[in-house]
Image (cartoon, rainbow, N blue to C red):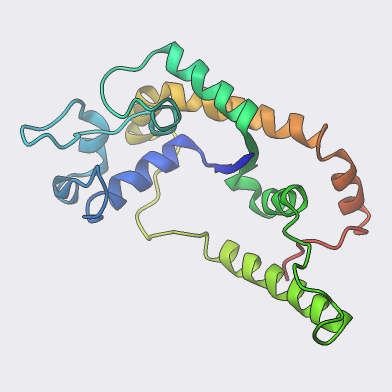
Length: 206
């Protein structure tokens, strides 16, 4: 079983644009992005003469369906949906703490791997769990691999262009939100009830 944290496709697309302008180690690195505005990027399509992708659309559907280049269709979208539903525990970037809490519970990340009697007894176990929790909390506060760039405005020309070109990713994202809710009402029912009463020792960031 795998896990993923789903982010709104438009924000993902914007982040990719800025990131791939300097990430020389990435397959889709394109230095030309550094000389383009976001509007120019969102308006472009196809590939440049040197083979660099001019605009990367529907990144998640492409990634899950192994169709990195060329046209994609409803078949690729349905394949990506099936992958999420059958292979992944879903997290949402907009509900990051709750998502990490679910992952901790599902994969047993709260369980200490050391024998509590081997070194310091119960205090050793408690300290280890505290360090794990603090590590995750610190990562969330940094928003993981975040790099600074200008924010896109919802409803702007750039937003609408990217929305149109990432229609499959948008549908997949809506599917993932629904799947997140369904998983919460099935495999995480007991966990969420414990969390509401704070009886479950898990992730509670200060």
